[in-house]
Length: 204
Image (cartoon, rainbow, N blue to C red; front, top):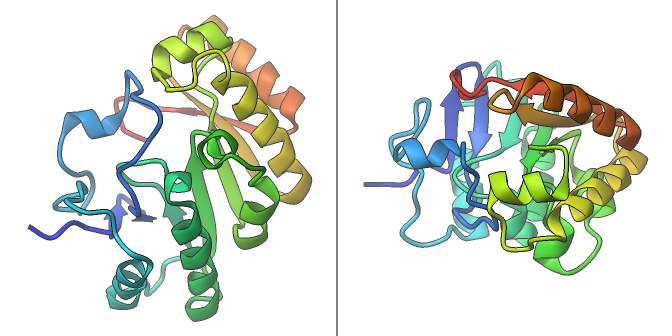
């Protein structure tokens, strides 16, 4: 079965460009099935090339689409070069469509370099998964491969994005206690970003 690169989920259009991710989040939607929305399959047998991503964009009907979101069954910044190049390609062929990145905010650790400025140069908005309120809680819920380092790196990445992008938000999923959601909101404000609580039951 062909793996979907571009797919619809409710009213949104998403780009699934990699299955790689440094986290195994306890609430991750990809642990619940092979696909979401109108996609048939989001698991790759082989990671897509930039030409395959561009071809998928060319084949998709973007009529009445106002925004595309890099968010699939992996962390988009794990395919950093393809992310940058495909975002530039969307800018070229679909200039009226806004581009958003949904990310765990660990791009600098993943890629071993500062990435916020370049990402913001090709994106209209960035949504960072805050997930929890302390490094210890964050490591427990995300089960990331950078224990003790990931939480701080994610906050630093968000602050850098705020410097270069007008629309930066941080999110938590409503599986954490209400008091932690309030603390998360304060952390978000300190980073200079907007705040949003995502619904686990609705998958958004």
